[in-house]
Length: 191
Image (cartoon, helix red, strand yellow):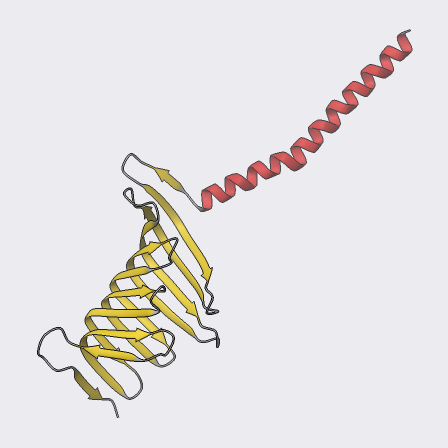
């Protein structure tokens, strides 16, 4: 009688030890990974807002463009949860032909559903040998329009243009440059 009881106790403890080993090696490691992910994307839930650090969004559209936007921090808009107000923003649009448009700004408002982005403060756009600096730049994917305005300066290897606004059709690459008032657009040759 004692022998079967001892065998049962040994088997019971053996099962407990194996269960502990499996838990510590597999499930506890997953807990560590979840903690690492949470620490990399710190979310501070204050009464006023949700601050997210190290944001990255990537999307593609039916025109074979890929849009990647990164920011140091973002705050989810309390009145519209689709909008994130970002700080220290870097974005790039990878076009179907492989060319890349780079956009940097100090701030931006990003819509997580439509991908439309309103860049603000020290905006800089670089595409091939084209460079645009402005106070604002609106990237409107639904209309395929990129609009830069306020303190606009456009430069390429041949010319420099001071204007109030530039609109670029992202499909045709046609652009319109104009001023809000009666002043003429200032064009300077760099050659």
